[in-house]
Length: 244
Image 1 (spheres, one colour):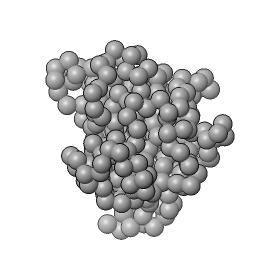
Image 2 (cartoon, one colour):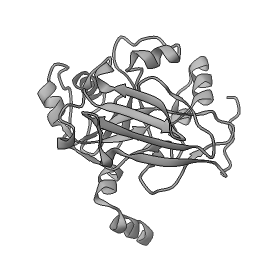
Image 3 (cartoon, one colour):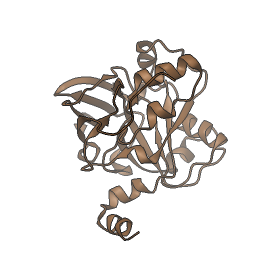
Image 4 (cartoon, helix red, strand yellow):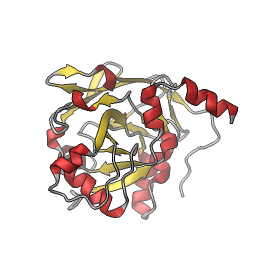
């Protein structure tokens, strides 16, 4: 308990906000080019799943760790940090949706792709594929007023200095009001909850020794608070992927 208090006492205000998240809700298949590159079907309505908050990797907390036997892929996303309770939001309530957002961040939804593919084939949940520790590198908190229009920013991700993902949020299939509406009809969004809004095309694998750098640009200028730079290392833990 003393160690927990000491950690919270030394945590930055930005990190403290993110650590308050009760849940992380992720929108899948929300960019058409990404759907095509994975040969998935286009959803008729927003499709979402959960990542555990324990998967968060805040700036300075260390490397992103690849579990043994996994094909680990990156997916850069704009994250919404909620500031209000949201229940049964109407899909056309743009003002209500944007007012419910407290701040933003950039996140990398790491995925054990071979684990996910097996789960999809067998009709099993994706929790393992998405939920490993360090599988959610996330930036510092981006002040809300730094992003006037979350539907018009550019996300990017580089691996070892090479651009792998680069796309505008104006390419979202389902925009933020519809996303928050569909989620809030199923589960209430609470202050501090994090919502990931989907990833553009270009996802791919990283291996130990790689360095991922991600961020967001507004009117062509990168926001410093949205910067992520994280090394990839191999896990030394006991887990090793085996067919279910």
